[in-house]
Length: 481
Image (cartoon, rainbow, N blue to C red; front, side):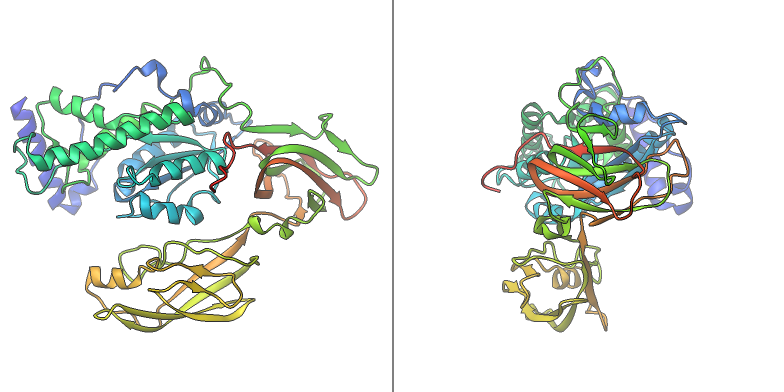
């Protein structure tokens, strides 16, 4: 066993030193033993797994998956997991994104989630982050996922860390080791509690890695390339312990997820057909899609609760701003507003930047709003129109430049968009592949409750509609929100 350990360490060192070796196939490691009862794995993500497993060449289900967290979530293990899903479920129309941001713990991600996570409205979120346990930020993020979307959540407990103050073969009872261990155990405890309370899946990477190291006579540092980021073995282990939970089991009860997203066929009695060709549907939820059927291209006006969706302020959002000049963070971590938004593109131009004095002044303009005011990154900014609000300490430009010891590039500016989560007019798409779905989001982000939809053709004739898809998050938004 000791020989195995030294052989492994040597092979990892060689991989780290050679770009040629990095291109070689993944090293073979001993298989992992499940951490927990495999018969229970996947119980809380069966809507997603059912969509994947029941996809066929004749019926390609659309599945959207988001990885979210910080730098460890951007390490290669996530691609292993994504590729495994694509290989196992080749007939699913998979859309997989990773929007994790390095260095951003729970207290920061709670801000970026506003433009990264909830508007994306995935079917499954795979999540882990450090920090924000004691402050409640992690719990808020996860609860908001369950309040604002129908996404299932897979939480994975922390990979093992090792302090730089302790040698690789140092005392596991060293205070610095115990401090990190206590932090990671707190995350594990939180995730298992939220798993029980909010029906989240929990992949126990932490316990699984501990068992693997003990079995193979390895130490924590054998899984790391620094103090926290996984090396090749570490990435392998995280991926394996997460993949074990991505399993389909039709014997699991469906009561937890069967009403999260429901399809209402156009010939269902709940859909009222009017003489002018209009379709009316009463429903409960916070999002509704229309799924197109084959037919001639038509246009139809969309009415939500008797109004065009564009009249609902909640159905607009600011996208993630373009990145900092270096270090790849969003230029600022949150954008709010206190006046109704409109679809447009925004630009922030830097007027003054002094890193030594920590000065950053800027001006904001919108493609429709026009010049909208100047601000200072240390002060709350409210634009003249009220369509842009940036709180103090949200800007990351000066931080990134100091972190990388660089100066502000000439003509650097920040851009982002205000986008709609709706259409006022549905343009029916061409249905060219009967195996695929052709959905359009009619409206998303309104209050989770009772609503009515009218789809009214602009010309006479039958609307090419196959079904409506209704999304109803499992939790109501709390009064505090």
